[in-house]
Amino acid sequence: MGYKFVDIAKIYARSGKGGAGCVSFRREANVPRGGPDGGNGGDGGSVILKADSSLSTLLDYRYHPRQMARNGSPGEGRQKSGKNADDKIVKVPVGTVIINAETNENLADLHADGMSFIVANGGRGGKGNLHFKSSTHKAPRISQPGEPGEELEIRLELKLLADVGLIGFPNVGKSLLISKISAARPKIADYPFTTLVPNLGVVHFGLHEHFVVADVPGLVVGAHQGTGLGTQFLRHVERVKHIVHLITVEPDLDEREPLPDFEAIEMEIQKHNPKLAQVPRTLVLNRMDLDFVQAYEAEVAAYAKDKNLPFFAISAASGVGIDNLVKHLGHALQQSKEADPEDKIPAAAPL
Image: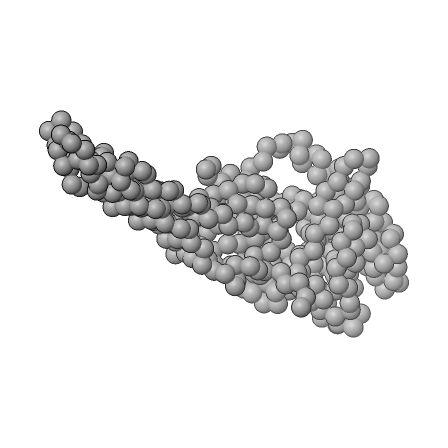
């Protein structure tokens, strides 16, 4: 059975209820009714989501959608408090966004390894009758029940954390390019939607610098409405700091031209999230090892200059122009980091 990438899951989370307080009296001579000695109930366990860099998919929660913590133990006599229940730790991939499934409110963004968020707080344990003893009430026969836990349906959405996103129509060479500039080894073939899952690769440039690039599949006209693989993967573009838009020439498809292809995909991204229009992008013409692609270089270069877009003509197959593209992306990301060094992604609520 092959690896399956799942980037959306819905789970039901329920925390544990608190244990009940105990009504108890010790048996001693000359003590009214033995004196109260009922202990408090233990607290119920909370449900906590925690980002784990060793995970890359939400697949487990498709099959185990119910995540429930245990209840606290009740109090006992002799002033013994009930045991607090352990918290239920639910590990998710880094980059998981937690959303209230009923209200669509964003609850937290676990964008760093080890970040955690309490989805459902455990109920507090009830007080035993010892707590209610006073000078005027020396033999109370009352205690508190434990507080109920919380329950909530949440939607988990995984948004890959990458510095650079490779976008473009199917079969423009995104997978081949990422395989040439990183150690990623995606499936490569000459038919649409070869790439069915996003691929991440680490690209090294200079002596010690590196950045992460993601090959985002499934973008076609109508993608923002779910056409092709559409909205399933458009969310993965939302975090990138730079977009590389690959175009090429498809000689067997008369209706396909490089620049109309570019504008069509850019429109889909704009419709999905208008803020992505502000992300710096680079226009890349791929397959320059082919004569009929070379014929378009001057036209595409002029278009890029008019749009004030950095432009590179490369061949992912032969490697022509790739080094210059990598250097350009590395320097662009460095300049972006120097201009805005602070991480602006909202942090999750602390524990």
